Length: 409
Ligand SMILES: Nc1nc2c(c(=O)[nH]1)N[C@H]1C(S)=C(S)[C@@H](COP(=O)(O)OP(=O)(O)OC[C@H]3O[C@@H](n4cnc5c(N)ncnc54)[C@H](O)[C@@H]3O)O[C@H]1N2
Ligand code: MOO
Image (cartoon, rainbow, N blue to C red; front, side, top):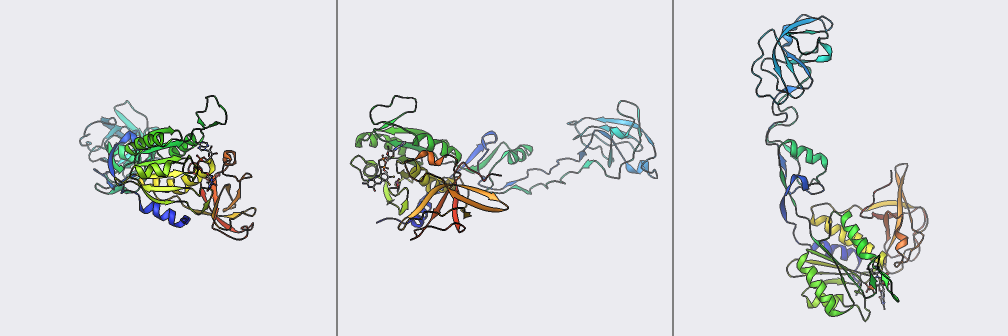
């Protein structure tokens, strides 16, 4: 019995182990997802300080002056950035102050040095009087102490790293990244760069899947190759299962005489959740779980089938396991008819584009699952449930961006 695409999606998402939390150092946080809120350990700014290089003074000392009147004040303090508490500003005087330096007690306004006679003298002539309170950054005006600055679930970019570092926070609690092992199976597979003998082919899937994993935020911990031999497959899968939370295999999962992956997984204690999905391509797709919470995705060997299954099932799983939402399905208008299949959910690589605020898509020229070149230039998978006739041009259809793709401009 074939499993429907919807059931396969649901079973995968329901079978994933609970994500774990770990503490991660600041310089390794990029791309990670916060497992808890982060509150400000102190107010920001932590102390009232100057926004300009200039002179701090009391506006009352210039009272009555119009903005263009010259005001003369003696200079009683010099306060560089990072200086310790500046103390009080004697009434009727000004302090030389640098951007970010603490305001002296009593001062309430800063005039930038460009509007004065300049630094270095015993006194200062203010040529243009600023408004009262100008150029002062007040303690806590940006964030109060204890206020939430980052929400749980937020993915960390350089912006969040800046915020954490500015509060002196050197590590944060994030969802642990799942570890992934990649396994390719087949006697016929040769490493790119090696000699092709007889009917050998180059292994493209391990390279494609490794790059696709990186696009999903994960560097595989191992990439292994097994020959089409039950013992060889057993050894390699045992290593993968012992090493990683998620094992992704390619090839050897169909019904051929040399397709041992499923039988070996059963021998290794992995429980089959489904095998054979009502989809084209990617029908012989398998998913299973081991008693210790490991999950196995066995993808069919044809390159397009492998990528379809990876994008549709592995990516949402890897996103969920690292605390991220499932990638959204997009809806676009078809430029040309889509060849739906009568019985199976059909996926085809395609090109999705935005025009005048609307999404449009078309399928790639080549449509067979062994044709890796059909993926070149594609940025999405277009999909349709079974239908007796093609989906006509002008109809709306569902698309998913490929893991590395974004919508062009
Ligand atoms: N009698 C049947 N034969 C096949 C069926 C079927 O239902 N009945 N399904 C077909 C479909 S659909 C697919 S997809 C493939 C899946 O087979 P496997 O997952 O067992 O994959 P293999 O047989 O090992 O390889 C299939 C194909 O892909 C090439 N391949 C495999 N690994 C790689 C790799 N790492 N890099 C590049 N290309 C790879 C391999 O050479 C084959 O050409 O089964 C159909 N047959
Ligand atoms: O379904 Mo196979 O995965 O067509 O190529």
